[in-house]
Image (tube, rainbow, N blue to C red; front, side, top):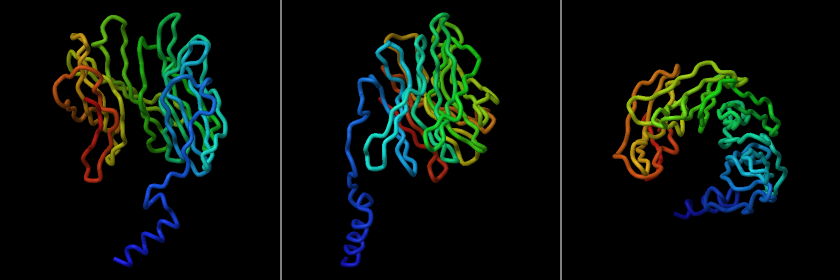
Length: 274
């Protein structure tokens, strides 16, 4: 017991956050909230700083756009920059993800209004936050919403989201899976829909066998309010569907799978809402 206490004491002196969860800093970000508007944020740590990214924030001109900020390791603010901002279009973007080589990347959707259509694209930054490329796919969709992206071998990307080709029936919504090369150019694209319900792709994780586990929702648009239930799918490395499962009965409200991963024993764990 005395040895154990001594070890705890030494660990606490060397790295107190490991033992007691010590808070190193607690500050409010961003320091200029008036320019960021309202939105959710993600934070990714690197060896030199923390990168903070908005999930689409409203600006004073009424458009949604995307901002990138950095935070020093001691918690002090560094800088904030506009990464994507159009005067006549909206940007819908997810948080940062880290690539195999330590770079940062994001997926995003551009919403056009005259005429109405969507496009998707990929942003990549180096470890200093410098933009390496911004690649917007030329395909025009009535609706496409990219919600997650993973990095695979050779820094290729697989993006996941929801797509709808026509304006009349939201039950036509499908899960869309897109593989892109290291410069964001599309390699292949797959869509998934298996019954009269709408399908939404929400999150994706790379599996040990090179395939992907996908979380989302199956949506009944025939009822009002709209009903959903969690959906999980497994696809191989080429995007071929291996199996799909839904969980529970349809419940009112927004009940997709929000996060999913493969566990050490080869199974899968996901988190959602009810």
